[in-house]
Length: 125
Image 1 (cartoon, rainbow, N blue to C red):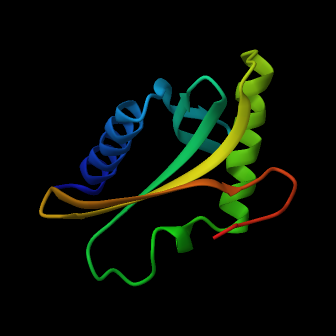
Image 2: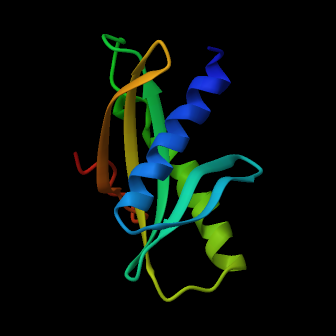
């Protein structure tokens, strides 16, 4: 599988995971200049901006390691742009999902709600 296919399968897996837990997928791959949000999902309380990282088993570093302070700042910027264009009653939240996949088969999904916030408090892992 190509890298983009692996990334899309990881994102689709997380969409299914969220939907099974009562979330509605609002948008996938929301892009602005300088940032992208993989998944925007909502339930009755939260508007979740989800970053998805897909890795192979035994990869150097976890998917969480790739969500650096700089990456978080770009996600926050993109989420602010989304919120400026779309009114919501839900509380915004930043989540990170790590998918482990081997030969196109999903082995695990690790999902962290409130992984970081927009105040500069990075990584609450």
